[in-house]
Image (cartoon, rainbow, N blue to C red; front, side, top):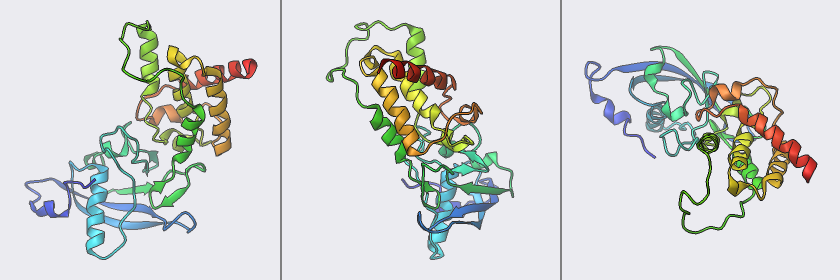
Length: 265
């Protein structure tokens, strides 16, 4: 997806558009087997209204014009929905502001400041190139959870299955997880408990998730351990930075569900 805020749009004067300049301290790594390093780049004349990813687009346009290798980073929706733009900005997974990196705007940084940008530092998310990490471990956790046995087809009438508003709201809150991986990146133990807890909580609250309830949590927890994620030590760093505002209470639900499954299976 190409940004509309590229180098060619910077012909306006500073009086017409507020332009900012920064120093980027950015992680560069050719591939997963090569050593990485921090490279310093100048980010001059960046529109204040540009998003963080649009700023990287502008820098990449300039690097390409200079016959240099552009910065590799992931992006997709750029609307804070998909969680693809996973990176660490000034030590904060997904950057400041409790949103995805694509929702961080350059006006939130002090003009002339140095911005450090690096990939997630999670064992289960190996670095592929520069700021791009392999988050397919989360996909495998979802696969371990399996399917529900509910019939497919047209949507049932909303009144067919009665669910209280309190339960529906709690399930929807847990289902808001976008799988960005910021929780694991923020956790000192690189734990994926918030992510798995959100998925388990969502389906354990709804009637459709009951048939495979025990098998689901058991399989997902064992898959989480197998991927190399750490244990939860109740630091609550995951909750503090989650772009979807997932509550750490889902971790308590996950623990209860796992204990029940360990007894019944």
